[in-house]
Amino acid sequence: MKIFSSSSSVKTYQPRQAGLSLLELMIALALSSFLLLGVFQIFNANITSSNLQRAYSRVQENGRIATELIARDIRMTGYWGCKSAAITKAITDAKSPAEAELEAGKFIAIQLDTNDGDFSKEIIPTGTGSITGTDNTTNLKFDSIDVIAGSDILTLKGFIGIPGVKIDSAMVTKADPIQIQGNADIPQGMLMLIADCAGSDVFTNTESDTNGTKFIRHVKTSLAGNKMIDNKEDTLSHVYDSSALLMVAFIKTYFAGTNSAGDSSLYVRSDGINTELVRGITDLQFIYGKDTNGDIAVDTFEVANTSTMEQVRSIRVSIEAQSDSNISNGAPLTRTYTATANVRNKTI
Image (cartoon, rainbow, N blue to C red; front, top):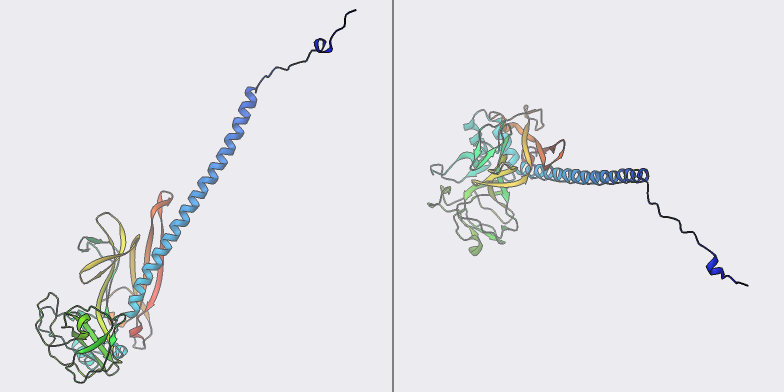
């Protein structure tokens, strides 16, 4: 009798591996493609949104900084001491430039030698005034910087305080030097103003080392430096005490310009030097709020007019800011920002 082993008699079935059909493979590829396309679109949308937000932030920041820088100086312009408003009214009410100079002279003493070749009335309130403007400039250049065609120019003048510096002690006579406290390297030849509510004096500092001596001097002497205006006498109009304000002159010209590399920016020109303030500024416009009836309130807004600039009480600034890269439709993001600043020293 034969005995069969179960292990040898039982056969197992091994199915054949057939793989994917062409149809299954095409369906899988199609689904994968749709999924990848969706992922790519989401990724691309996130990049576009990020770039747009970055451009918005940059443009908004540039516009805000540019308007604030100009507005701050507009508020400070035309300051001639405690009598600023009275000086402004005297000039505005005057019927001629000679009368304006006479009336303003009751409040502010110009101690500068008008026969000096460097003298110019630009810095004094009875000259071209504290505010001048040019509308829609064409073919204008400041050194190597081209002013953007069609944009406006604004020039502001006045006096501004010296941070950390004040008068240390009262003068005894009108010829005494002005003793100061604080560290301030005030250049020899700098135009200065000292003022209290009795009046004010514009003079040239003749001290060459204000930091070392702690004195500002106003003597009648010949200053050889360029743009240094001699004083006409050694004395001021009256004696000042330690409560008086001591300030230095400024003339600032704001404009939108393009440099040699083709970059557009907001510039300020002071002492013959162009300083780039904010990049991406492609246009600059000014509209002037004028008091036409003498009630210190703005009656109308107009473009720059040299014959009526003494009536200006506020200035509306419009700045066009542009992103530094293309955002949509192959063009950069552009926004316009507008602010109105009050000329405080003409309305108080």
